[in-house]
Length: 141
Image 1 (tube, rainbow, N blue to C red):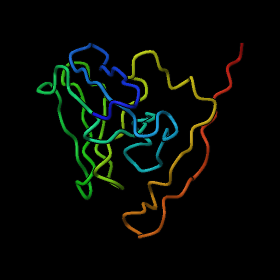
Image 2: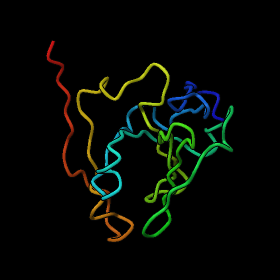
Image 3: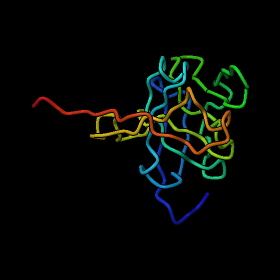
Image 4: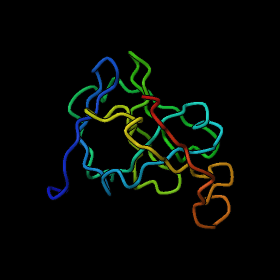
């Protein structure tokens, strides 16, 4: 793990799966995606390098979902069903961490989240990743 970057604790809803991560660029990599799977999952993810992830417990309680090219690997707790992280298709050396699973962080902490075009995926087109839009949250207080 890169010792110069802040460590974050990550857990599923029931607490069976626990990780420690150091984020690749803190929360500057937050994003959603428009691909068919991410549209339904609805999570906000942030990037971490494989070397900056450490399982504390419950790695054996994860289940894996793959589809289409089977490059992206989506992991879920077998007990509570919460998506904790996935290996990214656009860069398999990076993992997307579910922001909602990071201790002390909520997806609603971010006023705007870029939504990446996962329908026209850069791995299919050879072009750069494209922002399809922006997800905004304005509290009604």
